[in-house]
Image (cartoon, rainbow, N blue to C red; front, top):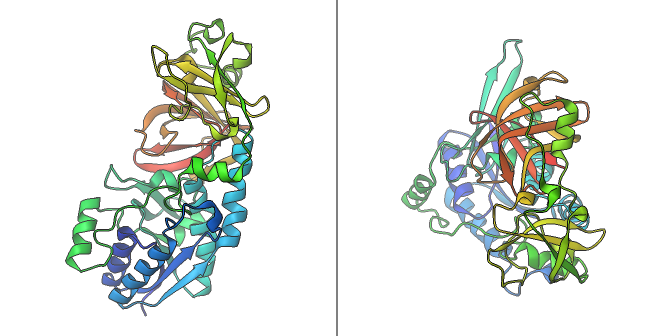
Length: 397
């Protein structure tokens, strides 16, 4: 008897080809479209594509001859993702809705719904790979590996998954380059073969994040303040060859920009609309070099900027993830408390992996990068790897 797989059909080419590949491999396949958003008031008129996406998913299911249904997850999505996002932005943090969507919706609520259909697995069109193996202690474990196409690798977006979630997950196209996925789609006549990849938020489609936030969070005029790169607060001693716990705590602490000499540079409409490393949207010009946001304070409603992409406030060499924010995809790979391990790490999607040392303490994880990292924003996820395998991740403080 063939195993049953519920495929999250998004209406795009990737999940369409994923469903076809599973059929080809002999699985019993059911297509389900997740509707995650109902509130039309925050979308651009006639530009919320979920209806078109749902119809495209249905056409794919018809073409493949598989059962299809729409699953309305909008209520739990608002609670777990959207409200969380608003709370984070109000506190001056920068959450990643795509990472959260995978952890909380696709591989939790959606996976549980799939299991109620007596499914053995849930599949998506993510560009990543999963490997099952037996560890030396006899336990079955799962590796989450980068997608074979380096330009499309989406393993970062799945960095909050657990072994339990991976045990029921399939990623049928993770071993393929994107052009090959397109070629297959055209060859088998899928209606989504030439459909463009989706842009914007994972739940509102074409609406950009700033537009969405401005319709949900109140504008609040405040000052844009500029800090010089030569301010004395940016002077720090070199990092010790073997840093202590106290050294790491100090190095992970952002510069106290409230202590710097700050000159008025303009006005903004709310510190919660901005994120560290942002360059566009300030409306302030006339400087020798471009202005970047190097800090924000929602308490004081201040946006702090500096000139040039080499401004010292833009960079941090140590980042910290509190223990309650840390997820180990491979719990068996945790270093012992108080010890360290070399890793590769990234702090955002599509960023090249960088060499770092991970230190584990009671309060959480410190990542000491070989080279300072640009635009570290609280709330973003740092993910650490061994080669192309995701070992774990955490939201940065």
